[in-house]
Picture 1 (cartoon, helix red, strand yellow):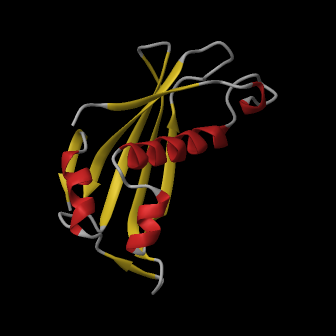
Picture 2 (picture 1 turned 120 degrees about the vertical axis):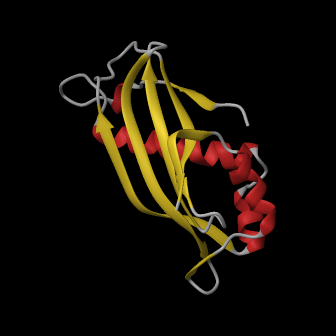
Picture 3 (picture 1 turned 45 degrees about the horizontal axis):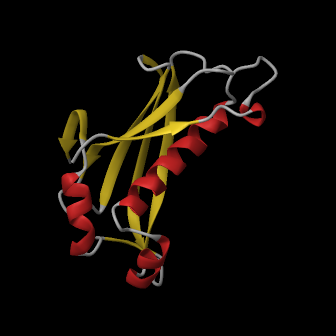
Length: 144
């Protein structure tokens, strides 16, 4: 699958008193990117509800490398960083790039699928596997 990336806009409300991006905005951008990816590949909220599953996060960690400031052109990518072969657990890596070539931050999220009726972790149905199998693998990707 080709590289998945979305352009982002730095808004006035995203800034802190030092006139650079607030730390929590990076996490919001990651969530936006993941939902956009799932929707684009046919895994909408409606389908997840029908299947009785939903993604959950165990951990989010952001490493900040360069500050993002007003006027910067920003994009965020998504790649599979780690995963179980049944895709019951997974880790995504988001690289946040500013001005076309500068790595501003790296966001890593660890997650799993939850059966929303039983409120227990589960393995996703086969129809979801193809999405994860075809997802771009991050540098250093490993099966767990």
